[in-house]
Length: 627
Picture 1 (cartoon, rainbow, N blue to C red):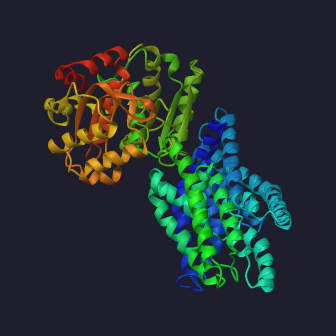
Picture 2: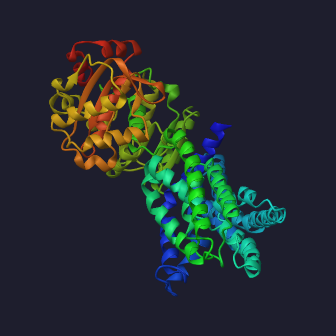
Picture 3: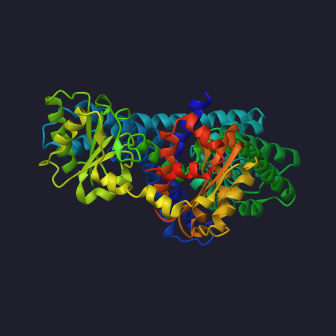
């Protein structure tokens, strides 16, 4: 169950995170230009509605489709989402999270079904028209069925909230209100339910608690502070800005994507909401009129004369409880959700080196004939020349009995990570290598008139497969560079006594500093990264290094190696005996990672154990500098 929840959360996160910038832009525009905003502007306020109704849902719908099936999936997902937007009056964020991925799945299944049946030369025509046709069909279905379904669910929800209020169980209304807010139904809840109830109560007693139920910023404040302190990647770095917009600008929508990244955080905002309402009841809080927008400043302006303490307490207590619960969930899942650029590069290099050894060849054990099953043609758009080349090669392979090999075309930027061989134009070589470092690359001058089939058929017939010249050129000299400048023998320390993880990282950073690779501030970045995500990579090896923000303190590329025979405990009980401190300038990090990946993949466990126990620094030096 937990794994399913995390997988679902990661998928929602993948739809939301790339678009956080758009949410923040909308939040700024709303906070600035609405009539109750910081600098009201009757012209620019016109941006608010179209952005929330059209721009943000379309971005989410496109991203959801793109995750499933690249750019084509994104286009179909966006078209499908537009049908739902037109058919309803409420923001269709929840609908976009449905129709975007559905559009991607539909077009992906279609492409898989007809990829071998398209006549050569008609690939682009089929791609373009199929995108339009399926987009129209899904837009119509969304307009007539999905949109009305979501609108009906919204109505049922409003009815359920009304019944809870009528039953006198006011704190429990947060069980429905807070999840509804996350699905961007906050305005429907506030203005459709609580404002009418609040107006009636305020006329009777001079203030109303109903004005504070949805507008209390406390639950969102707790989530954003927890992300700012314990989050990782873009979520951590953007949370402080979102917090300012939310708390002082009153734009609650700004924190919704952060909850969607980890659905378990819904429990945190529910707990915060219940706490806030309970506090208002205990201390008799309330507002004399709606707080619009729901900022702390607006709440103070609308507070009844005898309710300042109650209202401030409600905001503080809701934020404190939400923060406490959010912190638990965020810290518990930070490794699983970490957006670690260095880790991704390491994984890519590791995958590449499972196929290519330091001697620049593909070994018999790593790629056998039967294991070559995915070839990609890549070009700028992924539809024209690459589609023709892919179709030609696919037909040749099938005619000669290689029916188990899949050949597809993709745009540069969308090449799948499991592509084994990538064919592209020689003028695109650098971009293609950057996009698919794990693959063997074949570069041609013409997508149709070339000897790609001859090259691949030869690879399918031999036991040992030489790498392309470009791959060899890209990696030549790596070991020599380690010998000459990246690793110095005097920077290998063996037989060190066990210490804490933090002490080991500091010692590693000090050696990088003393060796002239970094400025001293870089050590702080190494410790900060380790707090976000463990740099332990397996087989008794850890690779501490600074966060991207501290890269400016790297003076030149270099590594140091600290050997702890008794081990240093890293996250989750992992024991590192070889700690490789890394300082990488520019693009050198990839070469460094490739060398480390070579060690972790090519050395047997028993050999690594001996290396981790040796008293001779030369053995470790040879390990990093072997040809």
